[in-house]
Amino acid sequence: MLEVLTQDYVTTARSKGLKERVVVYKHALRNALLPVVTYVGNSIGFLFGGAAVIESLFALPGLGELMVTSSENRDYPALMGLSIAIAIMVLVANLCTDMAYAAVDPRIRYD
Image (tube, rainbow, N blue to C red):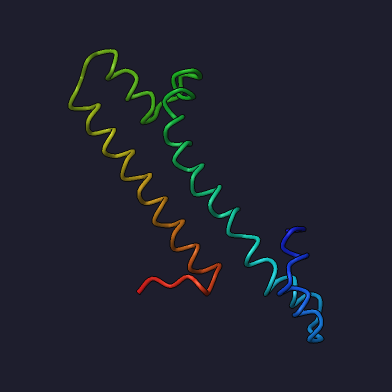
């Protein structure tokens, strides 16, 4: 956010006489949110991938624990189904991230 506040378009908005709140929320915050949205969207995939380790470590029931036990028992159809389910969850998270891009930055259009 501090880096965005020093950009030329923020200085131009201030020189136009806009209120500081309008400059920060409308001009600076929208452009500063793009890296945050990217990071959150990518970390969701890592959360789904790390579920197997956390659930097996703390003996929590869930998809990760099911994946570990099915790999120990060599239950390949269950492993393939869980892999597809996790891949679909990651794809949905990436789709939500792309839609959040369009909501945050009006320059991004999906036609």
